[in-house]
Amino acid sequence: VLARVPISTAMRRAAGILRSTTRCWGRRLGGGRGFAASATAADEEAEFLRCPEFSIVDTTLREGEQFATAEFTPQDRMYVAKILDRMGVEYIEMVNPMAGKQAIEDAENVAKLGLKAKILVHTRCHMSDVKAAVNTGIDGINMYMATSKILSQHSHGKGIDVIIDMAEEVVKYVQSFGLEVRFSCEDSFRSDMSDCMAIYKAMDKLGVDRVGVADTVGIATPKQVRHVISNVRSVIRPETGIEFHTHNDTGCCIANALEALEAGATHIDTCVLGIGERNGITPLGGFLARMYTCDRELVKGKYDLELLRHLEKYVSQRAHVAIPFNNYITGSCAFTHKAGVHSKAVMQNPAAYEVLDPADFGVERRIELAHRLTGWNAMRQRCQDLGVEVSDDQLKIATVMIKDLSDERTIGLEDLDKILMALCSKKQPDTAFISWGTHESHDAHEHKAAFYRQKTLDAIESLDNPEEDDRPNVVLKFTGHLFDKAILNRILDLAVDSPVSFKVERLDVPNDNAEESSAIIKVSGSLTDIEILKQKYENLLKTLDSVAETYMSEVDPESEE
Image 1 (cartoon, rainbow, N blue to C red):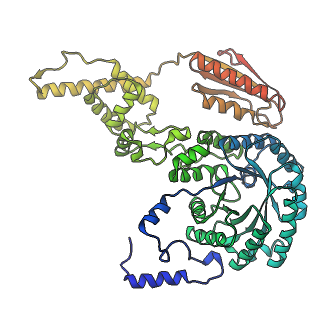
Image 2 (cartoon, rainbow, N blue to C red):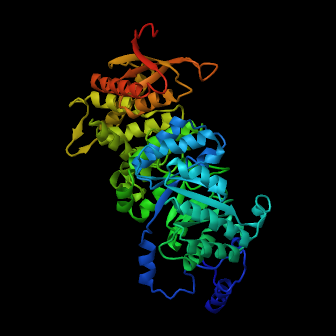
Image 3 (cartoon, one colour):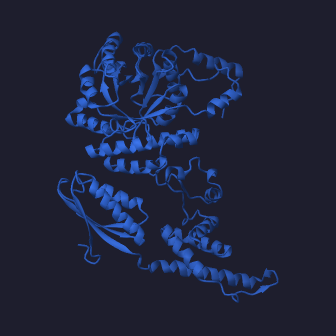
């Protein structure tokens, strides 16, 4: 709601903001289209609908490594890199090789995979760092140097002229190897505007592929991002890229990433699940969701969106965090509808309450049914999903009783399906009710309602007498280094992705992850699905022979030994 301020006053205030000459970007509010723009309404609408071109620099294997509980093994890094590449991510950033021998080996191993994605390493603007990096087989170097007073005084303590001179030497050295190079001003939004502009101009003259703008502490607002990026774009060549890196300390990272692109940025840094230092950075899934709403076909054409769920599950396990219930796209509630009005609308037209199509991301929509807010339309839809026929009159009465029952106990979808199947299995006798002409008598109506209530009550009571699962099943025992090599995670991933049901019957957790352990998993489903899963397990274990020997065997369901 806009305050009723006279137009002339509002114009003067806006002009005052735009004329602000505050030097520190962190306090400047100008830029953007605002009152200074002369575009027509049609131009404004066209710009709003335009999807900016962009490339993703995923830094899960660099920034993500800095997340508090992340523990990636060399095998994890190669696996994550492969999935990111299969998704279509354009760049994969890795840890500075100066971090140690393992960091050098990781960069070399990922570089040898022959991925389409370009492999970058993140280094300081130090000759020793880049010398350690250029021979690892990577495609480019993302170097940085602190430019804000608060960071520079605690790191290099150098002035802008010295920074430019140092950068010139290091950049030219990297370019002599034919590698891509990006130079970034660390903590850009708390740096002096003129200092950063001088650096970006100098780096652009050197012919760097990209300059980097970094919201290192997550302080920037979307308006500030638009202003800063548009200013940087105005002082560098059109062909020079702008890479934007933003932290999520104040919850603006996705909005800031979009603003950066609209203002002229070309590359956005992301991490799977947004993990990273402190509160992390722009999440890959959330960023893809945002860009999907700008141009669905463009994003679907560039990226294999269905791989996102598997990638996030894998990273969540290695980072020792659960995927939040409200996580973009893959959260358990991302496409879950509960309120009766919402559910009815979504069943008729999902776009009524969804801007993302879950099918494009390989996830499913859920309609929560067995609760006190449900409606009988949702029950009818569930009957259609199950392929059963239950009369509308019966469903309306059953819905009321199920709503009441949900206040007393939790009713899962499986329980609800059993009730609906039971209602379908009992046919109403033709002589059960007495009708007079086309209108039922009051007694006939009450008789019918009582019949439906009893029928529903019988179905509800049957929940307390569950039937045995008579589907084919097999009990599999896995023995080997299940924990230290993340093998158990991969075994369970295959089970989760399979249509079978499974239960971990027993898990021997060793005192030391390096010790051998075993897991017993009961798998139930069709014989075909079970055989397909067993074959996938055999293939997986063959590929892991070089990592750690793991054995699979069938055991007696009775003994489970």
